[in-house]
Image 1: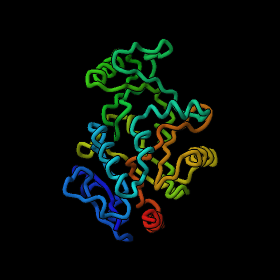
Image 2 (image 1 turned 45 degrees about the horizontal axis):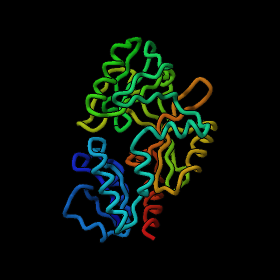
Image 3 (image 1 turned 180 degrees about the horizontal axis):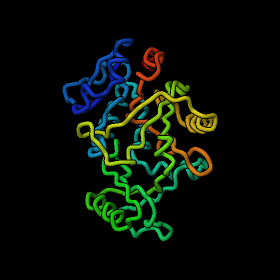
Image 4 (image 1 turned 90 degrees about the vertical axis):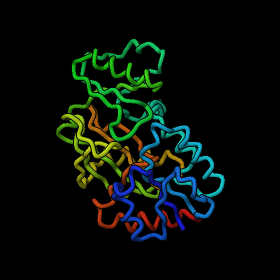
Length: 277
């Protein structure tokens, strides 16, 4: 028996889960449900623990406990690394094309090379679904104000230039299951207009199937090849000036948008089934 892990607020919202359970001997469980005996599962697969940003230490503590009694996917070390977006600095240092990113911790001055006068996005390093995200277009005061808000909550802020080509092309998410490419999706430009929310967890997005370009596929393949073994990964790319750039590497709780590819649910279920060993 497998556990597919969600959170209480996401019950009924994760569209991947019913597609997976149709092909798996699996139980959908809430990660912070204290009645669950995690050792009873052959593998525990994190899927939609979308409330972790406000409780990251608690979530990672839970993951550590599960790791001691069952097979946890993605693995604990990946969850620790991936739940703070400062991992982007490591990818950039490795020579990968990442959207330029500046990190500002509470109490630190703004980096001397950070220009807030252009079109920038400010967001927390621990966050999902556009929570705490502000786009400041030619308004440095608004950018500074959002940095101050995040610092007031004890959070590290990150600042990135907004890539205007997203408005026309959208983002591209390439989904990998068991380390192999499965399918790709187009995500609408959420910040091109005021954000609309789907409940309290994530912003509304228009999702369509997409055939990735050769450059997008090559970049995503390179990223996945550099990772430790994973059950799933979604590599989110945006158009940069010289080709695709990495916006995020989603290894903790990404929607896989299985409904966009007819063979994807059964394929993912087969991979997950094998994770139990």
